[in-house]
Length: 454
Image (cartoon, rainbow, N blue to C red; front, side):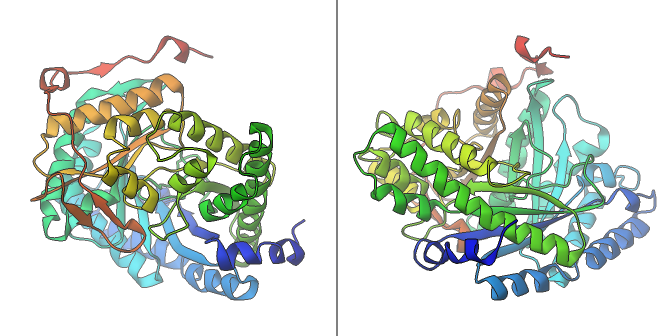
């Protein structure tokens, strides 16, 4: 049981330390919308979303007001659209029409984002999946609220290098299609290895085919809270450090459990998971990088950075898993560049490089996230960066992702401005040596030896 006294304990965290519920995400299955008539499919999708989610935003606001807990975003995730549109869509333009319907439905119910314009192609691509992928630049440039994701590999199946090669070009095309706004379309597009199917965080959220017809997921964030309590144990042993992080993660997750339970009860929709992710914002004092510095680094990127991040990620998960019956998604520490003031500062001082960020993704929650690179970066180079990150996920049996933004018309020394939670990002240099011959090989990289478990 969770009571109001537990919530009152977190008042200072909310008022002074940027604790918030990052999102209530309503997952909606669109399986029962499937038909081979495109117009009927679009009608079914619009009706299903607007009926199921009609009270989501209102309920979120009621919970905010009643318990004094900020809920920053209300979002929707849907079944991967490559599955839903397979029978009706005969071209990429047909899929882009579905993106338009998702955007209209999301706007009508008042949510911040809708995710699930997605394809799962870790082993191979069906024709419909390839069409959806090719439609992404148009879909993301013609909508405001739609987010897209593609799963390119897994520990069990290996890495689909044909899809990796295609996504390098798609990211370039999406950047070009949204060049008037610093290529922001790419900020709504993420590629995965080992994508979870219960992830409430955009841009990678989608409603898995193993899920119920509808489910409530909650994402909680609290880097400012963790940073504040660590100041009180400065210079103490690793044991004290770890215990402090665990206890704090427990308290933060309890807030998410409360909100999830209330939303589930009021909407009469089953509770799915709490995702405890130290997801930063551009606000000062709400930074994962600042936590790493408080642990003992002069600046993120210094020797010891990967070890400090591994410690943080593990203790956050250990504390969170004891606070909720169902912890999932991408729980742990996020290391996006544009959304974290400390990360931005480390890049600008030269302490943090793309190569060091890649090393850090071996132990963080997700991967190379919200990183702006020169607009003239080759598609094959982007594919090579994706392949490296997919390999880290595949071999280490963890979720990894890439959200790169090749900002058209800008280069190293410039900044990309995205606004809101997406913040801004300095353009980071990319290794100029070519990997084109490697990327142009066809087929897939096989699964690692330790994948053969049954």
